[in-house]
Amino acid sequence: MSKLLHVGNSGGFRKCMKVVGGKKTKDVAYVCIYTTGEELEWKDELDRTLGRFTYWGDNRKAGNPITKTKFGGNEFLEKIYYELECGIRGQIAPVFVFQKYSGWDVMFCGLAVPGDRRINPQDALISVWAQNDEGRYQNYRAIFTLLDVASINRHWLNDLENGLGYESKYAPEVWKEWVSKGKYTPLITEKNPNLYRREKDQLPDDNSVEYLMLERIIEYFEDSYIFEQFACKIVQIMDSNIVSIEQTRRTRDGGRDAVGKYRVGPSVGGIEIEFALEAKCYNLNNSVGVKETSRLISRIKYRQFGIFVTTSFIGNQAYKEIIEDQQPIVVITGKDIINILISAGINSIDLLNTWLSTNFDMWNIES
Image (cartoon, rainbow, N blue to C red; front, side, top):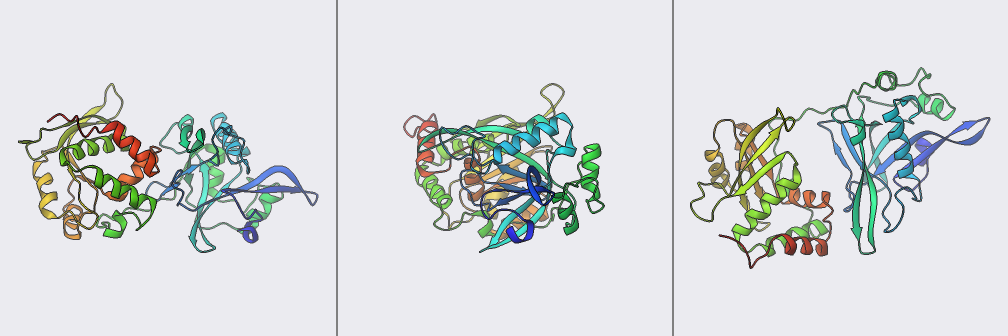
């Protein structure tokens, strides 16, 4: 990247400074964001179906002010999102997103601009509290849009470095339209309606921290009824639009482990859609089959949907039938469970143990 884009060799934020009269200035020409996608505490996410990139800032030290970081990444985030909110988009330096591919190789993901057409500018950058062994600290979560730009002309990079941006004839048109009008044209990959996840895509990598966390969850929930409470909690963390969820009784539950309501629209004037939940705490090598998924599908009524939560994975045949028959089933597997917990700041065995013992008392469960 340093050879390709005149930026540094390390850090998540890598800035290229403007050059005037052959000398570098303090003004930023453009920024490269490098993500491995492997950070457990702050896992960046690239959603190609939305053209959205979620990036976590560079403060990782307990007691450290949120903007006092080595590479100044969070300070840069504050600046560009302030400029976004003020409508002075012409002052915002272009952001090029790269992701680790293999070894030293990186993959260019796209040209990014702060914000998203689906959210308020104020919600595009928020501070989040986290905790590690040293104590509590804050970091930023930033939402970017990847613009519909297939390639970047090197002449534009040169012009940016020499102080030209919007005025350059090599600047991408969709970027110029965003600068002038605030119009987002995201780079969207259409979801394949017949695509379903294989086993390896539903479980964490072997011997990873995520894998060990999942094993701990399976070990903890010897009672399937208590695991159903865990599943209810997971879906609530996953989506704040779930306004209510109620676990059914141990016996005679009508074939559903829980029922709930999902809100679409504002609190006043919106609608609530009912859903049913099924939960299975299986070992990692034990797949969920057609019998289990069909049980949930058969209980779903008109204008309802289902959520299936499992610590393992959905077998090929069962998953294919859900997708090909276009069943309204949300599938949450072992890997999804861990990603949901990590997004909530539960990213280690110690934190997981504390969270489990706090929320699920094995000796005081109503039946």
